[in-house]
Amino acid sequence: MHTSEIAILLSGLSIKDLNDFKNIDDVYEKYKNKIKKRDTSKEIDYIEKNDIEVVNFFDDRYPDSLRQIPYPPVTLYVKGKLKEMELPIAIVGTRYPSGYGEKVVKYLTENLAEVGFSIISGLALGIDAMAHAWTLNKGGYTVAVLGCGIDVVYPQKNRNLFKRIEEDGCIISEFPISTPPNRYNFPARNRIIAGLSKGTIVVEADIKSGSLITARLTVEQGKPVFSVPGEIFSKRSKGTNKLISEGAIPILDINSILSYFYLELKADLDRLKEENAEMTKNEKLIIDSLEGEMNEDELSRATGLNITELSEILFDLELKGLIKRTPVGYQKT
Image 1 (cartoon, rainbow, N blue to C red):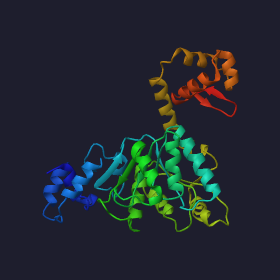
Image 2 (cartoon, rainbow, N blue to C red):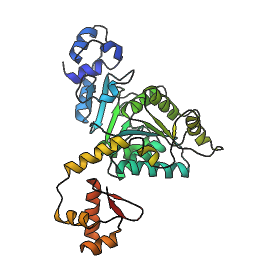
Image 3 (spheres, helix red, strand yellow):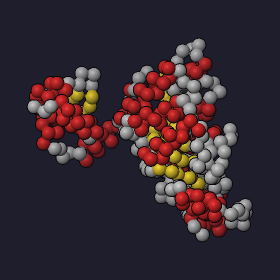
Image 4 (cartoon, rainbow, N blue to C red):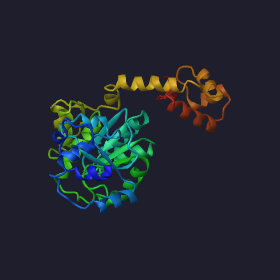
């Protein structure tokens, strides 16, 4: 039997059913008589025609971070590029953000994507969708976790975003093909968002928001929750302010997050420096000319490079982790 078909049939099992097994075939042999028999031919056909991967708990592609949570999904349906993430972080919040919330999520997402964080969210309207979109706009990697079948685009307003994530990021669901977006699916979805991430950022949320469920699951998994403080009279801030009162890390600026992950960021930066030790002639020219903090005009005069050419090389040096942008201009890292 095809591995994908076995994974589909076993998708209803819980992790306790996998104890003491080392591969998916042994699990199937154990439970095949208890599994509800159904014709999977249409699902297999749909999966193959639409480039959907079916990844089971024993698969090498299954995210290691998910294996560590209390109730990991046995089966994942995947569209796009599923890859190992060094710095995954969740950004969640209200479907109806204020102008303040929109500004904050853009600021956080773009800055995090720029230094190598992958952004995890739930493809909902509002904060979730913005986090996905601005990550992609910045050239970053994003994962959308669905509360429905992977063939169901929900909400419909995010159809174009769904396609963008499929092409440049990854879409994940634990639910079988054609599962509708029932309300009780979303808390289950939220445990995967928390499970994939090293921490969760809540931007704006009411007291009864599903984002607070994600925050609670994050804490239960032993990971940090970051919360954006807001106006005490705003309904959108009651949940985030409550999280802070309960011990969440308040986000005062991007450094509230970066300082928490400093050691991991530094290790990544050191690795990038080593990997990119070889520089082009003009890159070396810029590095040798860069004293303290200098803007592009100063660097242009110092190197003799025109602004257009200089800007492109500065961007490459940033990606290599050899320089960083400052309020004045650029400096060596």
